Image (cartoon, rainbow, N blue to C red; front, side, top):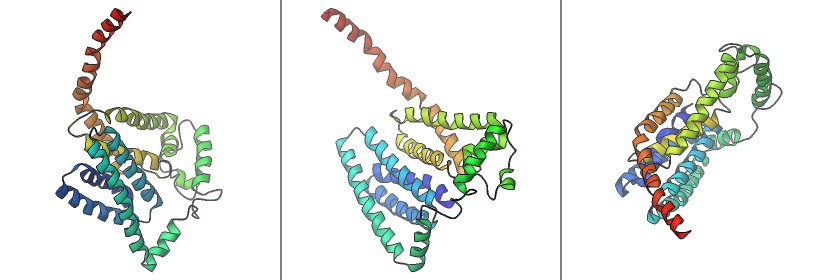
Length: 260
């Protein structure tokens, strides 16, 4: 799970590239390139997908929340340059026969443990049927005693391990964090660049949890706790942002009434 763990530091480095001064951005770019190589060499398809998705989401949200045309132009240029650099690094790594062989094997959409009646996705369907029939679940660490492997789906595993109540609470916690967290993306705070990196890393982890058991990952709960902590300290900024809108309402209504 090294690849999944490296997503957060990669996104923090990416934010330094997007928002830092030239010297800081250069150092962060070198660190980001090193982390990207490490993620690639984990040969984890989920980590590859999460890295690409999360990086794109960070740049998109940073672009949307930026108020400066120059910053937006910089983000666009960095995105183009980043794709070119990643392509060059990938080409260099694939020039090594052993790396190319492993990459070709892992890049296949169908792996032996994914397909078939008892493959990853087959176990998802079978596990869902068991979850529907067992409102109190089957207990923690019991799934692999019935099937060849664990469910590799965190949300399904929460229903199977602790029953419907456990599954609904876990699902509610994840959705609540995603929805409320998205609201604070657009609140202008001194730590918004850091918040964007952490929030996007959580979004990627929540998405990857459909294909992997992430409920035992320590960094998952680190992301969860930091997001709620930053949302708590950002509430004064949220109230300040809502005051001008309320203050502007009476004059606007008065003007409309005079016009009528």
